[in-house]
Length: 212
Image (cartoon, rainbow, N blue to C red; front, side, top):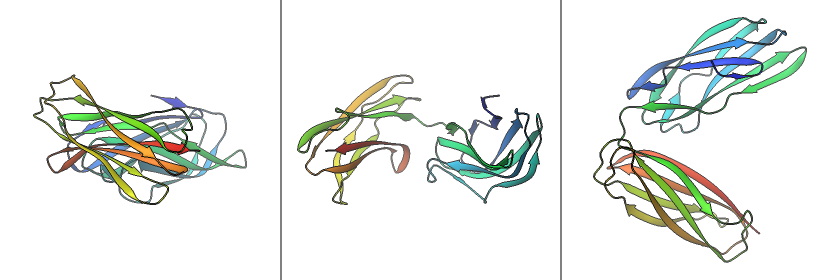
């Protein structure tokens, strides 16, 4: 099982079909301290793709080397990331623990949005033109998907940058697609890329830019 001290953890299953499903979280206290009044939660990175029901699990105590199994119900639509948080007390002090992202695959999607990258220096200047690149990876044979780029600007407007029909992809094949934006105002920009298979959203990525 993966370990992020002081918790050893495992979430199963890692693959599921669409619908209402159960996930089992196994956690173990690998320290020599008692962990008490624990609020254990399973959190979604994208509630549209996988939403978690309920408000979490409470444990009064998790002793040294003690292991516990917890169940969480989710509504699964498309593949996405989940992560675990634990809040409580350790050695008479407040305690917070958070797992890395855990990818849960849902169904048999034809492709995935593998990455989104803004090709720019860390703090681009005002009125710079920035190219954003997304990589689409085929998982099954596809005949063309819809890829959209959007930008949330400091002026609180959501601007569509591009709508692209991707080429047919074989399993394991990748393709790169780009869109450009001229950053006219100072402040924070968020770039979004969405991948659709017909009406179903099967991928979402974000990238952040701060213009000086």
